[in-house]
Image (cartoon, one colour):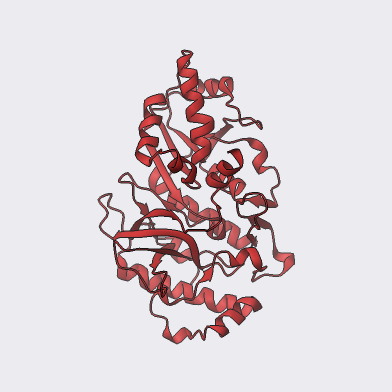
Length: 363
């Protein structure tokens, strides 16, 4: 079963039984594929005694600890098939994950992103403000997670401007000109949470004191990368939203959860503040004591599965984040599938989100 089967279905339209059957079959095919193509992965499956005949749900697919990609070169393609290498975020001295993409996997990541994000923003591309600096995306063959995020979301922009220069200072004149030119259109904004707060929101507050005000009431902001620094500063998601609306009228704001090891399968936040799993992926909360599956409302370690990876065995990963499954198929927003929230990083886990690693360096 190819990913095309998923791409023909609306991303939040399948109930539990339909989605579980479709996703389990896809994950089994991926597991077989990677077992044949990646010797290291095959040895791991042999070590845990994996038997494909025993798989009935996505939770039965063996998971790899996400940090394994920092320690091993895991790929299911030849070196001559690699078109792009992506690296995870990390603070100084940290090892980074390396994710190897072939043309098919890279293309499927983009197609999946379009399906998921369009459900929240609409299918029409919009003028776009990237709340970052242009130097992050200069090396097109070696992408950091930050650069990959920017390039991934850039496909939703009809016209694009970087709001910050390479010194991370707001380009006030450029932003004013852009907003005047597209004043009657919806505008998409994208950035990483701490950078949005530090280099955009706080600068807008300073400018407002000087009589310079920006109107972004037609804007849609998508942001991600972790909340650690802002939580430490007692800035909640509700406060983040309230402050942005106060300073520039921005009220359509969506956080998202994702990682470079499963680029494309992001979990978007709906208008009720819930993160959603699309038909392309799923989340499973695991008890730290025995890795059993948690019940709804029970905190656990987040396992993520993805229907995308073909070039590396990243289709079932155990993260270093803790979360809570809030429900399935019954979110007030109307989207089917599981919805959940993130509690934060596990104790003693390395900082790794784009927002959090930048905040650590910035601090």
